Image (cartoon, rainbow over all chains, first blue to last red; front, side):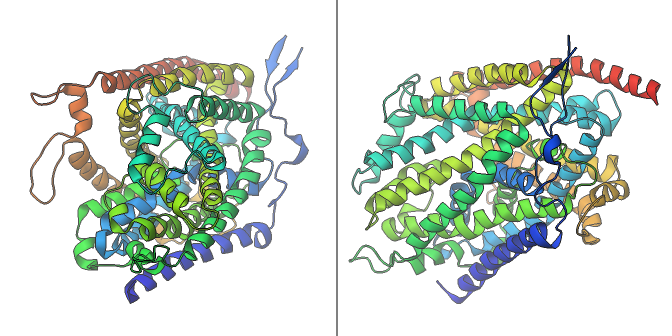
Length: 51
Length: 545
């Protein structure tokens, strides 16, 4: 592998890795709001029947 | 007794991000992407492909992604979850909802053959575990195994239920998909993706570490080492010359498309289950970056170097996705010193997980449409979609000779129609909704600001880039235009349908096209019915307000 290959590989792999973990960090910690529970217990995916 | 349905929604923000990322991460990340990079790099390396790839990511991938997330959430806030419903709402013209037919048939048709490939992955994982794929160092033996496993030699021969036949795995994956989709958005799709996505990343890292520590495994071929394998993938070659090649741009843009699941009709449906306070900008970027991490940092580092160290450049050049994945890589893992069989199992199991998270996403747009368009409940919509996709899947599996049915459907729906839908979506977002209103929709509840230059990208550059790419794609892949010689020669996919003096039409290809048209007509008829229902609902809403 030549120097250009190393540069492209490190920039590409490093770039997407940094972007991914930064975004994930912002979602989990930075942004914070509703990272885990968005709609809580009011969710019921099943149909309900009503008279 | 009247039946009413509670509105479905995601259980957590991380869940929706993992579900969208799971939809995007599939076989393409680990097989198609490295194959494309190697194809356009050749002996010089695929670095130039990567430059075109990242430019395409910024100019078309991320903008369409944000547009789909924003339009989907807007549609959901008005009570619509399917592409026909959302486009009906956005376009405000009776014909608008029929454009949405693409957002339903694309995932439904792709599911019909994707689940077949998913079954190959599970079958290969099991065969690695049981030692059924220890076939020596002749790639021909692996080709024969694959041919026998999927029934490539003769129509009808794939339908068998031995360990080395696809039938039993197909039933298993089909049942798994419909079991999860029946459980619903949060308890089925989200629940599965929460476990499957981290697991597949973990498994990929295990395989990556093994590949990067292979050194030069063949003693008398020291040049076939990992560093040279990485060079084969990443070296830039003659950058200027390579970047002047239109085919390279076409392939890079195409890869971004297929990889991110934009233009599938999936993201728009997934995002419709968010509320208007939920962020879509950061969530969309996170899901996109998760896909890119799996594709570039994992897929780009595993497949080509692994194939190169055992087979040299001859084992990589000209290999299509299936050849690379189901002939070359099984040989690589079989020959890998120290627990190659185990790593083979791990690799194909991670492909299987990636495939399930993608195939699940292909079912939800159909389910959403049936539920909201016809007013039926989940049990009925799952049954109806299950019947339609099972018939389609049976068709693909029966006509397995030379994978003709699969190949035809993949070309016309999995490639051609995706370009069409993605172009329509970005034009609707930038021009019909309008960039200022679209910008406002995207930023509701947003936790990050989209850089302002994306306004120009979304309104002008992205549609223009897409249209140019699409025209070039049709010219080369449909009309067979050769950029080097300037000659036209109809592609095999067209000749399969229309025939020529040298090549008679292929009946399986024609039947596959007929199947696509029948499904499209069926969905269009349902949309017409749904349109009446939506009009009544809108009228009732108007009256109530």
